[in-house]
Length: 640
Figure 1 (tube, rainbow, N blue to C red):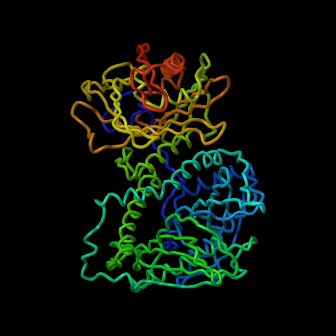
Figure 2: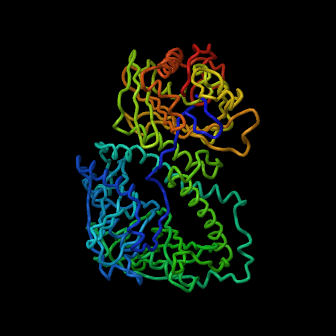
Figure 3: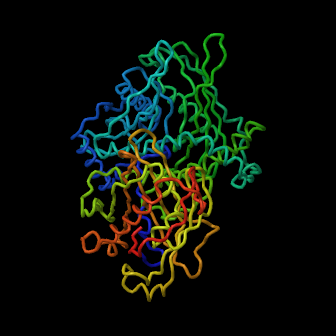
């Protein structure tokens, strides 16, 4: 398929779906009554649709909590304090985790949270938690917080969050193996699929920080030379809390939410000492509990401002536990970002910080790295479709988030349960799914090839030139990591073939198109789960648009490969098409053309011919030997 420059091409899919989950900042900012009245109606309708779907199927792990905000729960602005809300969220999520595990559970980590609105005294907080996915001994719990105004009967979403819980060991010290979750609704299936990607990002978080610190090009050396810099020592806070029975759960372990609340308290004091005003908490990075504490422990909390930027500052908090004469145990660390807002909600300029020698300098530089990570996450993961360009610039520091976005978009598309069968021929099925501004297609068939082999053959895009005539050239630019690679693909001229758009020959003059694609490959996380190959466009400074080529863009496309029986595989191809592409695929959807069918058959024949590994001739990448060079399949209209 060919369309004009800078349009969305269906060469390998389109639009990059908005990832609702994921790792996004924690913002706690003022919302006026007028702001509440101006809440986006589309968002409210979407939430209502979700509620209706949830009512149809009751999740056995779901736990709900409702609390009315009293003055004792609020801060100086008569708003619910972040610490109190974190306590309620942790308690609700823990009860949900224990419903699934059937035993006691502890909080292992909490992902970053983004709070859209504050909650005032007198309003009701409604919290819903449910287990999204269980792994071997840990599980992800999704948390949704909404607010209810009793006087206006208004309801609105406050935040989503993701927490990881671990089942406690048995009395004999053995780990508890969790039973798998079985998603029932479309929403549960989406969360189940994307949970594996969120887990992957959590595991890579520390490595991302280390990689950024090894690259000094992003560091702000001018901050150290500021004349009005405030010594970081002036912002130090140290506080001791005695863990009493009201602070502990039914397992006599300190509530994770209670520890979070104490951490917010000391961090707020440290931030206030720098700005000499009442700061507003804007972000909390993901943090992990390193170990438990119990009733009778003393918790030593230390906080200090690590770095101050123009309109924000990062505060680091460290928590250690000790009991009587025992040694201190490091149980948690967190990083929180604060702002100081004026009367209109605009962030004020903050004084710079002068870090302490040695350790202070290390914290100063790490704060810059964490700020870069926050911006990448917000830009790539949390933005809506209209807020971010399709071809986000790729570099090694945002690779993890681009890969997450890529795979999650395809998994969420595959999890949709309202696909409509459009046509079926020789056991090749074409499905369609209509959205507000996109039309998605799914082509699938059972192929006589083992899933692992099909994954290897389709995972290297260079093999696609052997069966897809639309792939004139495919160059491996570089491996991004062990699971992702960057390719440059050249497609036929816009004036060739029956699928060219009206007037395209005069517009493009026969100019060929090229694409810079990120291919993300994922092996199954468990038995009965598919292999995934996801594709999306990125931009590379080393490969800018060149004369003679129209640079196309791809937003969401790829394959899922599921092992079925007797070494056969169910292969599904997905492609999401934007309005610009719809006229060129409508003939297939309407049943007036069968180009999708022919192209998929060519792929099937290619896989069947190479179902067994053979001596490498083409140098395919991956763990298996590459297939030999083969003749090109019959000339077919291409939809990629």
